[in-house]
Structure formats: C-alpha cells, structure tokens
Amino acid sequence: MKISVIGTGYVGLVTGTCLAETGNEVVCVDIDEEKIKKMSSGEVPIYEPHLDVLFERNIKANRLQFSTSLEEGLNHGEIIFLALPTPDNGSGAADLSFVLEVADQIGKLITEYKVIVDKSTVPVGTTEKVREVIEKHSGCKFDVVSNPEFLREGFAVDDFLKPERIVIGSSSEKATELMRKLYKPFVRSGNPIIVMDEKSAELTKYAANAFLATRITFMNEIANYCEKVGADVDKVRIGIGTDSRIGKRFLFPGIGYGGSCFPKDVKALHNSGKEVSYDFEILDAVIRVNKNQKQALLPKINKYFQGDLKGKTFAIWGLAFKPETDDIREAPSIEIINNLLDEGSKINAFDPEAMTNVKNKLGDKINFASSMYDALQDADALIICTEWSIFRTPDFNKIRNKLVNNVIFDGRNLYDIQDIEKEQITYFSIGRKDIK
Ligand code: NAD
Image 1 (cartoon, protein in one colour):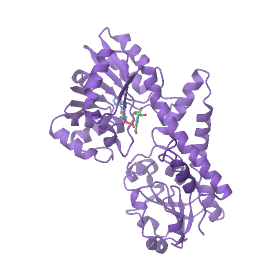
Image 2 (tube, helix red, strand yellow):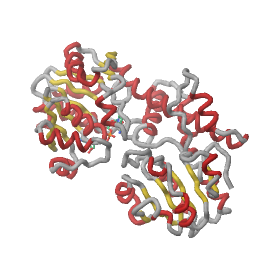
Image 3 (cartoon, helix red, strand yellow):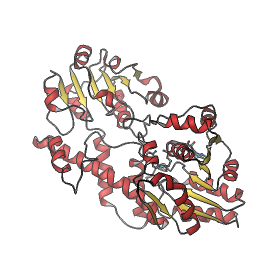
Image 4 (cartoon, protein in one colour):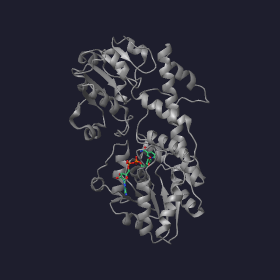
C-alpha cells in the first residue's frame, strides 16, 4: 500500500519505517528541513534500538522516502498518518494547533479519497474536529480514523512490529477495512485489532497513560511512606506484584515519571474533564505527587551535606527520562540538575545517549563526561537519575576511589540493599533504609 506519515518524530519515524518493513511504500513528511536532510542522507535523527537496521534496509529497497512537502505526501499516500506533536499548551490542555493546521492544509490539497489517520495522542472529539476542518475546504470524499499509538520509547520498533493490540476508532467500514489490511502482518500471532468508535479510541490512549502514571505514583507514595515507618518498598513491591490481580510490572518506585507522554497526557485528561465539569480527583493527586517526587532526592542530599551545596560537585549518571532513549523531555534529571545549579553546585554528567540533547538545552552550564567513571572524578557524590543497564553492575572500587565523599543518591533503586551493604558506601535510595 502507499502510505504517508506527516510528522517524523519518535512515533512518525518508527511508524513509517515499520510500515515500509512490511512492504508498503512510505513517504515521511516533516517541516524540519534539517531532519529531512539528515534522513535523506541515511542518518537516523533519534536513538531508538533496532531502528537503524530497518531504516537502512527500507531506504535501500526504495520503500522509505522523505520530504518536506505535505502536498507530495498527500499525493503519494492512500492512507495518511498524522504523527504530530500535541504538547501541553501551557495551561495543561493538549495543544491541537499542529494537528488542526495540517488538517486545514489537507483540506486545501486533497483531490481524491484518502484515509486520514490520527496517531497523535488527542482529546476526545479531535477526530471529529479534524473531519470538520478538512470538510470546510473540500467536497472530496475522505475518512478520518483514530489510531492511538501505544509504543514505548526504547522498545518502539519491537512494540510496533509486535503490538499487544491495535486500537482503531472508525465509523467508516471502508476505512476500517483498509486499516485491518495494513495492520494484518503485525498481528499474525493473534493479538487483536480492536475496532471502536472514535471517541472511545481517543480516550483509550489517555486512559492507558493515566492509569500507568497513577500506578507509578501510587508506588512512589508507598515508597515515601516506607521511609517514614522503616518498611522496605522492594519487599512490598514483590509482595503485592505476585498477586495476579496486580501484576509485577510498573511497580518500581523512583524519582517520578517524565518523558514526552505521561506528564502532558495526565494533565490533558485532567483538563478535558474540567471542560465537561468533571473533576478527575485521582489525576489531580497524581500530578501533584509526581511533581514532588521529582525532588525526592534533594532533601536527602541537603541533609547529608548539611545544606551546604555551594561549590560541591555532583556526578550524575543518566539524563534521559528513561533508559534506551535519548529523549530528555520532562526528565527528572534536568530538574535535579537545575536545582543543584541554583544552589551553586557543579555537575559532571554522563548518559549513554542523551548528552547531545542536554547540551542543546543546558549548554555549558554543566560538564559532560566521556564515561560513567570519568563523571565521578573529584565529585562529592554520585546521583543516579536513569536506570540504564550499564549502571546496574558498576565497579564499586572505582566509585570509592574517585568520589571525594563516598556517597550515592540512587533515584532508581538500582542496587539491592544487601549487596550495597557490603560495599562500604553511604547509600540513599527511594523507600528503603539508608546505608551509612
Ligand atoms: P516528536 O516531537 O518526536 O515528533 C513530531 C514531529 O512532527 C517533529 O519531527 C516535528 O518537526 C514534526 N512536525 C511538527 N509540525 C509539523 C507539520 N506541520 N508538518 C510536518 N511535520 C511537523 O513527537 P512524538 O514523540 O513522535 O509524538 C507525536 C505524537 O504521538 C504526540 O501526540 C504524542 O503524544 C504521541 N505519542 C508519542 C509516543 C512517544 O513515545 N513519543 C508514544 C505514543 C504516542
């Protein structure tokens, strides 16, 4: 099939590449000329495991092309995916201007039947709005379908190729059949394509992200309470996770959720509730608790250094909002770094993939180390912000030798308490006892 993807970020590029992988001819469109130039010369502009192999293969096979022209994209595809940003508009609502502006242009350009597929995460009613905007300009037949994306950054290619489910919100049989045909190769193992009305599909995505954010936040509150009463959140986590009604995943406490999705999506759903006079009280609490949780290490750091952080140097391991990505949007690391900089501290940071993005954001306010151990050189303490695998089994001798004060503040509970007790290191984590 001929497919176009408008917006070639984390979702759009993975969608375009994976659809090319199953034999479709794909044109990816983006307004970012630099990005299109890079991709046209064979460079993947983001870090996403396994994406490079598929990207190269499909470019070579002429199934994956790039353009800055929406008109070219629209002429090419029979199915047009919108994978455009829907950021927080500043007051908590989703900013739909990217989606609606492209819809407006589609309305002006469309000359034959197309299926417009909204892959962006959008509030209930947006599919309808997109339809109305296109109709304003065009008498041409078209359908608009909601197809929320559930891929996880860091596992995006695997998630797209083997989705647990595909959700399609559609009121057109013709469009639904085209979507079923397109996705058939991805659900050969029997995972479902769930077809529903557009509004329910739009809400499914927000409900999924809000539920997962709530689950993390609930465990963070349990962890905070553990610290007050001397319980161990690791034990509690295993104790409840083995209950099949609860399950083991998404129960790990830490310094809060970040990223380009959970924070904005929880706020957007909360905000959408307000528009219909519904107060999402749980989400209100989730937003507040997560904001505080991002600061959870700071009182521990302050207490250890007796409030004197001026001139201290902190090594930071992990800048990305989670492992296996270079994405730093709403990353807890950035908040911690900014707080420490405000106190007059210095930062030596290391991340396997996200340093370029942080350099673009913070410039020379912090130092970037060439390895995780170089970051420790002459640092007063180590702070762990992201659970990259390479941080899980470090050489504790090197840590002890390089740090001035032998202390780790671990925001991701990377080490077992029993193991770290043997290492003669002062250790603070989340929801577990301090090792001194
Ligand atoms: P992104 O910021 O990485 O990419 C968006 C791309 O759209 C950018 O490359 C930007 O240049 C481009 N763009 C902006 N305006 C454009 C226009 N007028 N024409 C063409 N291109 C334009 O965003 P993302 O992370 O890929 O997210 C896209 C959507 O998917 C959002 O709604 C997000 O909530 C949702 N989503 C994201 C993820 C994720 O893990 N990142 C997962 C599921 C859903």
